[in-house]
Length: 277
Length: 281
Image (tube, rainbow over all chains, first blue to last red; front, side, top):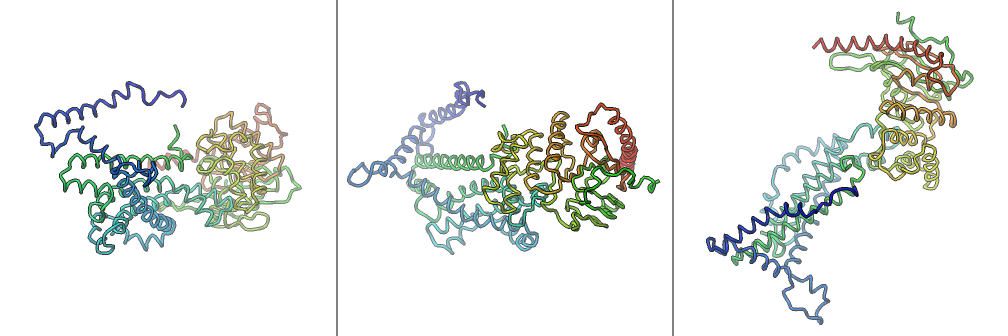
């Protein structure tokens, strides 16, 4: 491992940057040539400026009002990103928190599976977005309908993978555990659950990806904060530079969530053969 | 012909004074494969004494693993009974620790956690578990690997962990299903020697399935040669040689020749069956 090539050799960086740099140059050329209206496609410089302004605090620093750190974090973007992240995490926790026990029960017990599977098969193909009207009717405006939609988005991927994970536990582990004298509870908690974690985590990863899509959509309809809300608001003012700056931020947050999930995955599955390298 | 080949009690087991621990009576096991009925075991009678090291030897499909699984309690026989210390076996249990060919270690547990698992199930105290695990890791030369996961171990090391895991249970009986079958020759010999050393030290009854004639002669007090379908006991051979046994000794080779002939007869029936099943399609 210590002898591996550095990941960021100058040549690799140059090669990786080539296409983005060319794309940005083309974009800049198009917008400064005047061929395209600035409202339709603002220049990259304008977008970066706007992104920076979106990041920075709106009020001047006042030591009497708050600490320096709080002031530095008081920018609109950070608040929006925090709002979105909060909804994703809460919605995901609700959805996955319901899917995991149900999936374990359905995977482990054929009778429970037979009872619940038909309903799940009917509900599963309905996209979470289709629940928007109902969610507003049931929960009004604000965070509750958003959390509801996100939870639905996270629920099914986690459920399906948990069921598959429990069903695919290698029989040899069950035999070995029975031979060691494991009872039903020990078997489930110490053998079946860990053996199913690779599947469950794969489901969680899909689930949080869905949750992130749904949070942006739900913020466009039901709330007045968050990254999804912000880019829709910017459209009303024809601030295309802010729309793009907001989209860029959504991408960054999505990337951060994915990196976080990946880290968690690698930690929880550090025993797993698939990660050998 | 079958009756002539059946159990031969002329070669008495080595520790003749020890009480019978595993008693197999009239065991039959049939499987349905599609419309076909396969008789894996037929009319098996076998007594294994306390402290004996017994090998079940035979080609693939002779039912040796099926017999082991019946003793383990994983697959109850269709007919007949298996009793251990007078109790009829109906399910697997920690009194008959099993070592599998495919190791069957829990990959999410470290070496030490794998060894400790059976003790935790037993409800031993943390201090006792730690002490016993430590002792076993020392005994199987695993102390430097205690915090590794199975994926980071070689096959030989994994099988050491599996052996430590069943030894932890302190069960009177060890069941071993071709435990060294997947290992290279040198590792295999090292583990055979360690198994013998442990067996002599802790005095367990071992029922060991193998298809290696040399392995069975090297290890066993008694070798049970099995026939191919239906699986019956072809011969019950006592191995009366002092240990460590020398693979180049004339006695060893004489026995090897004898057993080879018996096993090859069954192997040929197995091959013919395989060829027939292929050409039938």
